[in-house]
Image (cartoon, rainbow, N blue to C red):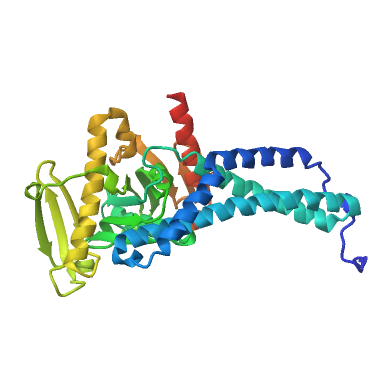
Length: 384
């Protein structure tokens, strides 16, 4: 066996030497286009304004406003930093390729090619952000998941999907808050509502709306049979003060009750959970996960306002139905299939994107599905 060269350097001619100049030029043009769409100067002005608001001594006198300011500030700082960092990396990469060529250094070339792959991926993710230009896309999101056909497996699947989305939010350091959980009798959840409190959460997650289908060997079937179950995902934009959703007191009925956990156990000892019924429409929302009745009532009102905003828009303009999507439990409107048996695959039925890494997806690794969904939606809009 021949000993490796003492330098540890792979001979330069062993590495593919495709001229990267064309691809670098294409990536530069794409990034320039993204910078134009995002309007970096406007982002910097907004950042300066938010920094000024955040420095105000009376900021936390209004906690809800303060949280919105600090959340927007953090998000905008991260977004601007990501674009500026990508520009520096792209500029440095052209120098790295030149260095590799000048010195005939295979290690440096391999490093440059790896960075090229990484930049290409990050640029693709950033490009998706520029496609979020809908009326409510920049809003925070309210996500509701409901068990549909499939009995206890559907309830268990609902809980699996909740964990998937909360892990996705956690991976991105997006604050999320569970507002209401309705536990199923045997296992899992009948429904759950949670918020993702970061700008553009609605535009990003709205492509997740629809019926999700799970195929697996049921852990609840003592004969070990394969079971197909369904869960519906609904995504709403969080309302803002500019939406003017007025709800007269005599249009709602408010009931308070004791929060309950799995198996009917009480999760606190006071009647702090709140259920609000909107009498004109019959919409019912509830919140039981805050510490006090006042907090639960405020959270439930936010959910009700979001549902009424959606209803109003649907009435004003029929095509706004796309905001909510059809989330019924039939085979005809499925948007994604999760197959755990007899093989492992998650497949989006609209975009055709698929992966065999089912455990990764269920652990929140869904960025590729979301990116494909946003691009697909844009194509549908253009075709329409």
